[in-house]
Image 1: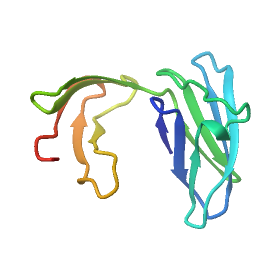
Image 2 (image 1 turned 180 degrees about the vertical axis):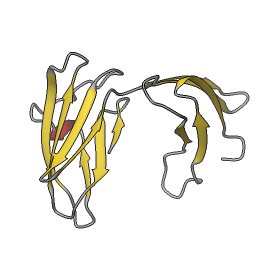
Image 3 (image 1 turned 90 degrees about the horizontal axis):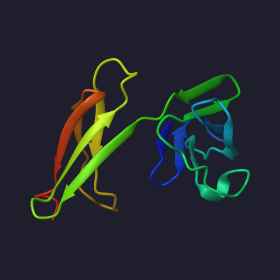
Length: 141
């Protein structure tokens, strides 16, 4: 399960055509929003702003918890971490710091250009407790 709190979506993969219930709670375990969606024939599901029961984005924040469940299985992201970044247009780089100290061991940060037929992701392995990284987009175009 993937959570994008900047754009308020949750996505993942499960069994084909499965009904997926997604719940977002705050750090005090109070429910912020729920949604139920169906996976496609490949098992992929996506929860966007219009899919939440209220019809509004849940305003997913660092520290929130996100649960996805289908019959017989549950995935959870407890809690959601944060990445602080600074873009440098002259150097064509993005510098960042990862804050998800509750994880043991390094986490992968993906440097992506989100467009059809864009370049492959660059993956950085980063210390989750304040680990710094830099994404260089010089060769992207």
